[in-house]
Length: 117
Image (cartoon, rainbow, N blue to C red; front, side):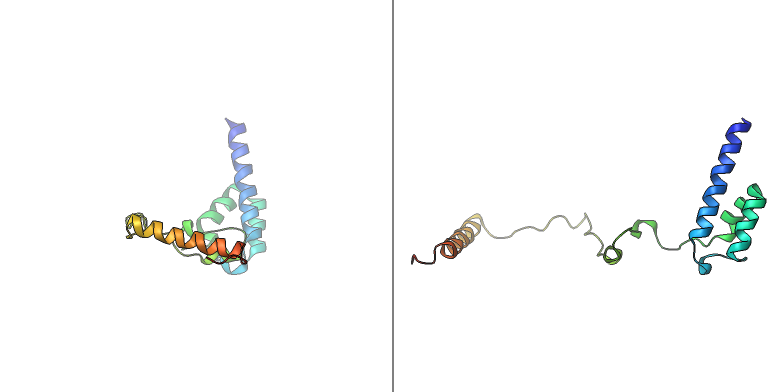
């Protein structure tokens, strides 16, 4: 039992230290970063509990919008709602086939420009 508690406390302490070190000064409340690190190192149980309860500023954004890696993915459009359903083609089958035939003829002309229709 004591071994499990010790490993759990060690894991939480390491997690708190990593979290403190990786945060900007603006995301840390009440004390400077160095003081939080010293508090967690010298008083692991109390320091870790205090860090996760009052020292850390939690993000107010929903977690589903968080993305990693390329910053261009951070500002992506929301996915279409499933209630709207897929987009439907309102053309008749004959109209779709006629458009497909025109497309085939167009690409045939591009491949063989020496022939006239």
